[in-house]
Image (cartoon, rainbow, N blue to C red; front, top):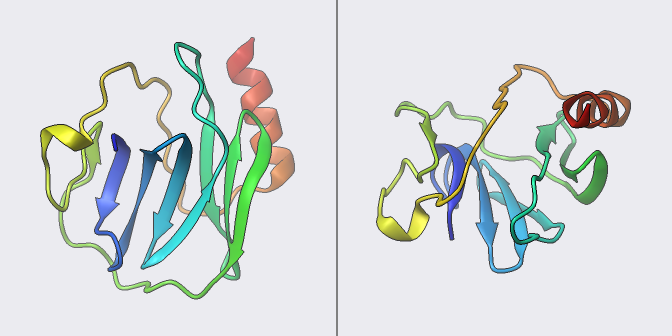
Length: 123
């Protein structure tokens, strides 16, 4: 259950992006948005967004999950973790691989912006 980036706790506040089984989990404020597929030994571009009404998860420029929601928006007061779950670090949450090009925005990206970002990263 490796966590790619974490600034929150499951079923609580904050957010994280995780590999869970053969899919991805974009979790924010107590809401799970699960989808996509986890390839083996392949580069993957992931984006999790929330626009005030929907949480969306994109893989390689395409939407793979969406859920209408009202997550807990109380800010997470703990540090940001990369490659580990911050709310309860442990070996089961460590990423054994590479994370590159991590970007965190204070706004939701549109589908067009996500697709353009994927295309740019592939060049």
